[in-house]
Image 1 (cartoon, rainbow, N blue to C red):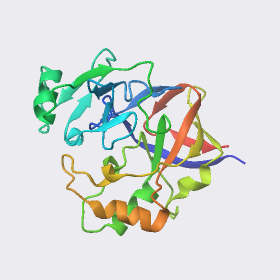
Image 2 (cartoon, rainbow, N blue to C red):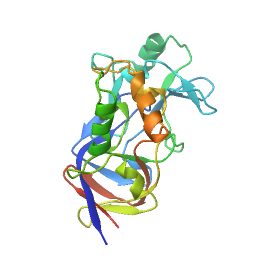
Image 3 (cartoon, rainbow, N blue to C red):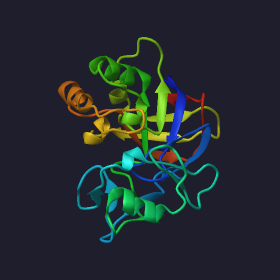
Amino acid sequence: MAEIIGVVERLWRYPVKSTGGEQLDSVQVDERGLAGDRLYAVRDGAGKLGSGKNTRRFRRMDGLLRLGARLGHRLDGPVLLDPLGRPVTDPDAFLRAFLQLDDVELAREDAVSHFDQLPVSVLTTATLDWVREAAPCTVVDERRFRPNILLRTPPGTPPFVEDHWLGREATATGRSGPRLAFLRSSERCVMTGAPQPGLPHAPEILKAVFASHDGHLDALAEVRRPGRLRLGDSLTLA
């Protein structure tokens, strides 16, 4: 039986991996995710991408979350924003000075996935409210978890309801809405407590998520059918 699991309250796109995102009213969704999402990254001389951690593919670059980026209706290049939200005229020169790294540049990587796990992240207001209660002494909003979709769930919805969607598919309102296949949840890292504009350093958030839910939070999805997603769309679970 079909079940409406929530309404799209906010849509987030992150044009440059590991920097702040932009809110959207509507967006096209295809197999790569939201159009323009993580289309660019800060790349070093060895080809590693700027992130909050060090791995084979990623290089930790502290401070990226203090920056922002926006694409608007253009996909041919993001506007990089400094910590005060001002546009940067020379992104490469700014990044080298800001990060104190002389081998970095802003790069487009169409053929390479910038995603740590899967293309689309969905977070519910029920789970976000739980985080606020678990970490009452800090500022909590969805930017801590970098979802693409913040879903407003009905009153009484339990936290971590996203776990119950795994292995199932959901379709957005209307014939043109995308269909998402939920496969697993995100494994959270120190970026959840990293400082960013309006959000102070808050390591207690990650501690609470690990203590109560093994460090996992949200639902990650593949796109099984492309389509247009809009604020106010309902998601219906098959």
